[in-house]
Length: 280
Figure 1 (cartoon, rainbow, N blue to C red):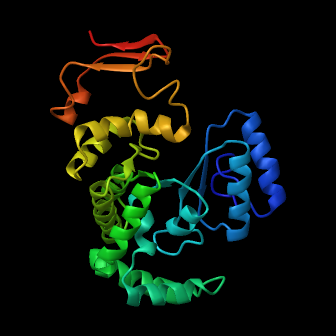
Figure 2 (cartoon, rainbow, N blue to C red):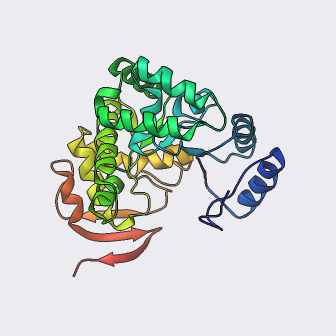
Figure 3 (cartoon, rainbow, N blue to C red):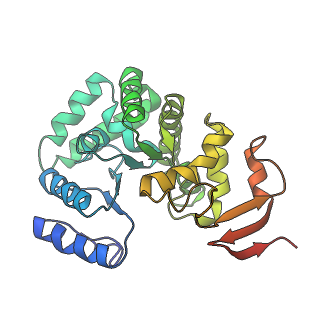
């Protein structure tokens, strides 16, 4: 339901909800759908089918860190190719003993909250040792071969760790897990998308996070230009420089291929051919 963010999120409970909402979104010019949290699997499959029919791409955030109704691997089975947040793979790559316990809890709807919380703490306490490296490698290989995109949003977890009132242990674990998973995906060639969730002024920080996790400079540049255009299927207009495309260009003083932090030295910004910023 959309009780927490009315007007921003929409509850989808039936096929009729899917039909009415997709028509409205398409008419209003939406370029994508973001799905997350407690989706009914059958309704989700119907949503994916209908979104495909009207050419609305879907990016999927599985939701809470561990107990997802539509985990990444199940979403991939339906043809989803874009995923949000570095922790998203965690429930799919647990050690076998933890996976069995996790799946038994999730098999009951609604799950036993006391058991779920107890297992979640056990998994958080294990940190990266809760992960099966073999499962992670296999899923990363599948994502790379199927052309998936991944938006890890590492900066979000770092910011959460700086806020008073946050459980520092839980937040630091989420950051650690997100980095661990993202590093493996980069190693296997999964295409990264540069995103910062609701922290828009901090994009350069996220690009530098990707560099620290092993993504080369060209891959980082593509994560903020070509790859978003490819996923949104607007590469004929955006994402790279060629005649006839929209002139949305950032010009910097130093070469970002030698050091990605040089992207901070902005001299000129054009948006759709119009100058919106120039360094004095």
